[in-house]
Image (tube, rainbow, N blue to C red; front, side):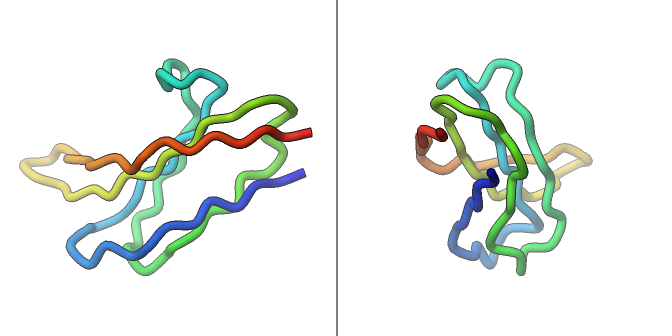
Length: 79
């Protein structure tokens, strides 16, 4: 089973970070980096059963560091 995470485009962003985790604190979270700001979805293949938390961050690179603004956390229970 897979999950599709979708978000609205941020014209000021250089790219997006997508994180998913079984803990709402996102400690030990898995992540994916999308370097094109035109992409507005990510398919996560086989995350596993149970309750998962997802968030998306739009980022800009400033002085070699990614500055990220995170979305609201969304939870989903997978069977």
